[in-house]
Every structure is written in C-alpha cells, then in structure tokens.
Length: 255
Image 1 (cartoon, rainbow, N blue to C red):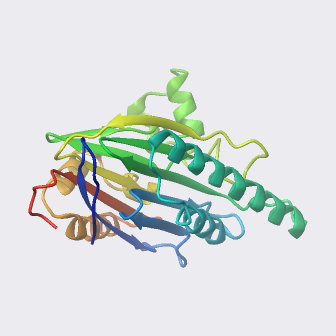
Image 2: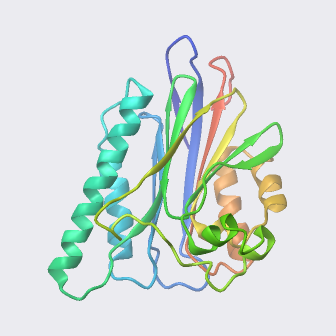
Image 3: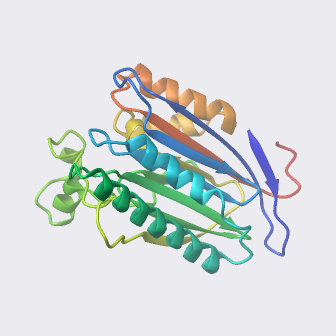
C-alpha cells in the first residue's frame, strides 16, 4: 500500500494499492500497472491477447508513464501523459514493422492523474476507471470496442453487451494505428471518493452489484487482493489487474 500527502488549498491525501494475477486460464500475464502516489499517477495496461509481445506493450506503457516529472498543473500533466502514450504508440508500430510479420503489438491503458482537488482520467481501449462515491458506483470511461459502438448505435442493448461474441474486439489500442486518439476527462475529487482502475479480466467476471459491494468494505491493500481473488473464483478467464485509490482529508488518520 502506498500513500502521499498533497499540499495546497484544496489538498487531499491519497492512499493506493494494486494487485495483478494471471488468472485461471491464461499461461502468462500480459497486464501491467503503475502505482505512483508520489506523482499522483496510477495506470493499468492490458496487453492485447493473441498478439505478439502484448506483455512488452503493457510494460512499455507503465514504464514510460513512471518517468513523468512531478506535475504541478493538471492540464500540463494530462498533455504529458498523452505525449508519452503517443510516443509508445509509435515505438510499438516501429517494432511491429521491424518484425515484418504484420502482427500488432498493442495494449489498452487507463490512467488517472491527481493534482489538488481534481483528477484527469485518460484511456485507450477497454481498461476502465470507476468511482465509488457515497456507495454509488459510476463507470467513468467508455470502452473503445465493437460492442460499445453497437450499443451507442442502438444496435445492441447494454444488457446484451457483456456476453456478446464481439466483446473482445477493440476499435482502439496503443500500438494499433499510426494516429492514437486518447480519450480524457476531468473529474472533481471529493473527500471519501474511491477510484478503481482495472483490466477487463475484472469486470467481465464481476457484475456491478458485486463490484460495488467488494469495493466498499476493505482498505485498498486488502480490497485489491479481494477483487483479484473474486475474479479468479468466478472463472478467471483472463489476466486481472486492479488499482484502488482512496482520497482522504489531510487530517484523516488512515494510512
């Protein structure tokens, strides 16, 4: 578990933890995570299964994000993250071209950057960010997937999306195209908020009701382990990775 104190008129303190597991079916873990409370930066990257070097792609993303200079402003920090992801995107494209096999070396990513009383969430693909506030769980990202596009076009109901045959087909990933479009949004943080970043190995196994219950009962370090165990207990069909961040008042004694 990691902690950090942030100074300023809207200062918040954060406590975070992360966990990852290969799951019960895969033989290798292509997920990677970043837990850097000293930077106010967290991320989950999911290497694209079935493609070469998916683990290389996810590791490259979190390693490069971890080199980010400590951001003083949210806007400049978010722009720096976009620049890092675009640079990794080009490096992965170059590597794929050098291999001359026509395959994609790619990864999804979701990142959260906190500065003062706000956070920026940036993502590519179907790794997700959620917020638990006052017992209500809200998904903050929208999947870049074929199924989500069908839901948006009202060709498929949200209830039918989870088990659809095209649920694993991505429309966007780091390393998949020359131009990388990184979605982003700014959220105001409240004391008591809990944020979750995760790969699809979590939410494909656990429905929202069970996820809400699991998120609301344990400190971050125990919560991350519990979520991984729950996903594996329900089948663990993919790698599963979770990062949990709690935002606290500076005077809150929890570590």
